[in-house]
Length: 145
Image (cartoon, rainbow, N blue to C red; front, side, top):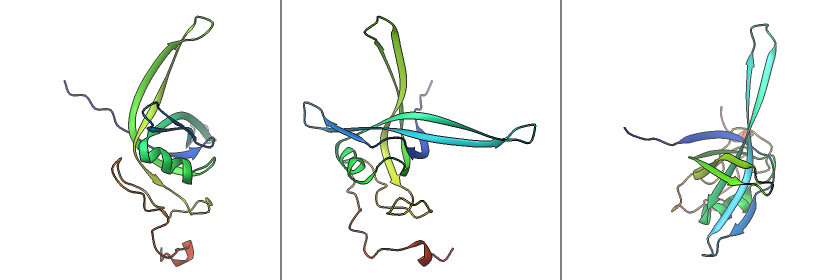
């Protein structure tokens, strides 16, 4: 039987990214992502739920995320689910799912004020970020749609 582990999420960072380095000097960044879902219930009332997801990226991607993203900023991520389990200090068993990022795309304006304009980076681990090298700034008013 074939296996497939891929996840696509669009959400907002719940906290500033936390950058650290492995003993091999590989960069690691961790942050939380909030993904909202809204719908109308059978009673006609608008309902909303928020899913909070822990995310982790490595190497150049980690450094780019740490440099350009902050709490509240929207981002699209593509990655895979990872399951971790451990024993807490009190002896209880703990576990959680997290997302290991393969690629990501900045969303919103460069000032973090939303909008649909994509920013910078959408490549894989071997790609170089285009942030800062994208030429003249384009505002939402310049986009014809």
